[in-house]
Image (cartoon, rainbow, N blue to C red; front, side, top):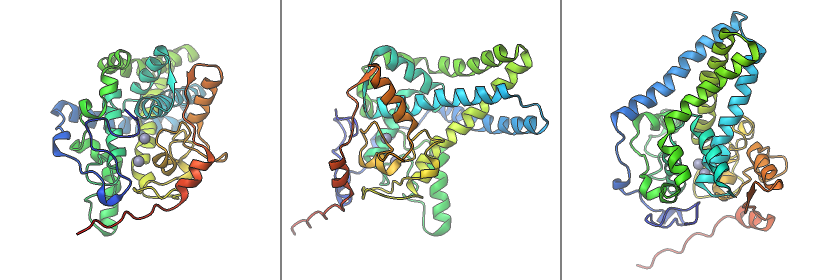
Length: 333
Ligand SMILES: [Zn+2]
Ligand SMILES: [Zn+2]
């Protein structure tokens, strides 16, 4: 399977918007009620706790240790999503060993954006139907016109699609390769364990850094709830803001955009128009000034031989893609 395209069962991706594949209804199974409840809890509890953290910080009870734990846990789980879930598992931008595959799957799971196989399946479906019916989180499909339609679309792309859960991808159809990978399958099956480990880690780190139970608890607040809240909304902004605001260097057949101010908080994922133009590229920031910390990590791992077969895009291929695509010839009557 070519990783940036649909799995074998799905219709081939077309270069023409006119003949883009339509999403078959059969591939959008309803999630169980327990999943919906879990999604609401995972979204709302951190939001409430961010309020508590802000109140704590305002009261002068914020310690430097809390910020260290926040930065470290944000980076670890964030890279688990960007380098692991996205560039490695979804798009196969590079190859690596089983232990590193396990590590990236674990770190991404601790971000609490769903189990790895579900995440990958939904994202592959997004690439197959980008901004067309069938895209799980497009801000442009079926949301009406004017500012109300724009707001409804942005809300749907940001979080609404998670709450409604009506466009989820079928794992068998979109992630057959990962279902056949015993390492990924194990981490996927034990998802809850990694979520809990992602909370135990900041608590233990806070405890070790401050030597007090209160220090452990405030580190859990910042490295658990605040980190989860910030990373969730950074990821969600790719789906909402990066399909709405920003520059389009490549005339892709979707609305993806590069949003430079969002590049660092998203660890390089906000070069989203570049990414839709070259989904398998390990670098999303294709130019030297397009900051892409996830690509820096992949390069560093490549230099010490821990990853290999890294997909790179030549300047010639980039140049070719900047040209508008010729319109497909009208079909004969
Ligand atoms: Zn996109
Ligand atoms: Zn992608």
